[in-house]
Amino acid sequence: MATPFTWDDLQYFLAVARTGQLSGAARSLRTSHATVARHIDRLEFTLKIKLFERNPRGYELTSVGRRLIETAERMEAEAERLQADISSGSSLLRGVVRISALEGFSNFFLVEKLNDFAASHPNIALELITIQQIIALSRKEADVAITLDPPKAGPYVSEKIVDYTLHIHAVRSYLAQHPAITRREDLLNHFFIGYVQDLIFSPGLDYLRDVLPGLRAGFQSSSLYAQLTATLSGRGLCILPRFIAARFPDLVMVLPREVELRRSYWLTCHQDLAEAPRIRSVADFILTTARAHGEHFVLRS
Image (cartoon, rainbow, N blue to C red; front, side, top):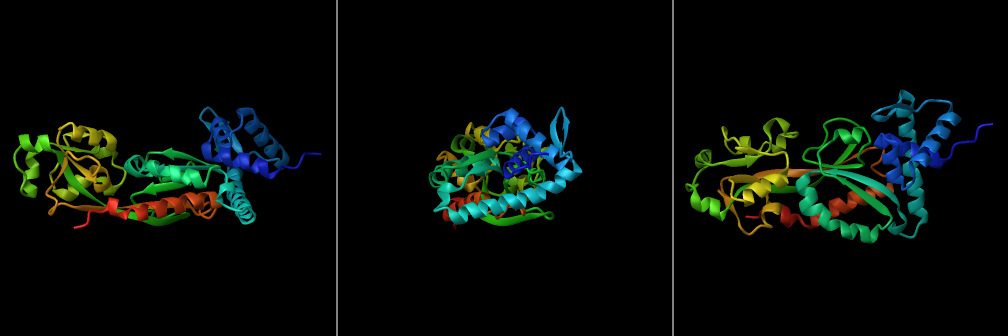
């Protein structure tokens, strides 16, 4: 007689489904590669179905596995709600939450605030991926995504976090050594720093087109931090979010009255996970903390 599978087996199944690898699942569950494999083998043996295709790239869900993941996630959410109901506080919430977020929001805001989250949720481990990938949610590679735009379709729940403004900036030394900028057309005579054009993953990052048709970046990087470093070194002009540029006293805003771009950060979760207590605790923290610091994101006239 086969040993019945347990809720633990489903937790291991979810971890492998989300990471696509035994090693990734083992890290997220704080256990060993062999333990994860044993639970997966037992679950498949008990159910008498194949949940994963094993290949050199890792573990890929079969069609049956994809159907099971929805049921398992509903069970996971209910188990977490039960735990939250019977616990005396958020400190008893536990698990791993993976966040996919933009580089600027992550490095110049979110990471600095995570100590506060850790203090009130000591048993929730956070993993932060500083790249943009809505597709990660559909593959269950991330639990929460912070993006410039909410997905237009799919099983997602989205909420605006905060608006933010962007302006053209340069260091004082660059402006002192180059022709004065008094109108938008003058920008065509200056060196710009920006994103790699064919790697722009969101229309909201195509800043130069919004500022003035014909502007081209002489130095392009997919990394906002690299753009910032190049700007601080005096290489040229760059469009930067207000909450980042304000940290560097040597940066001067160029044409502040004429050029202001406005964008928004959005928080998105897969609908199957949106109300899981550990996910909700992270989402609520991000929303509440960013909105409480709204004056850092938007330049007030």
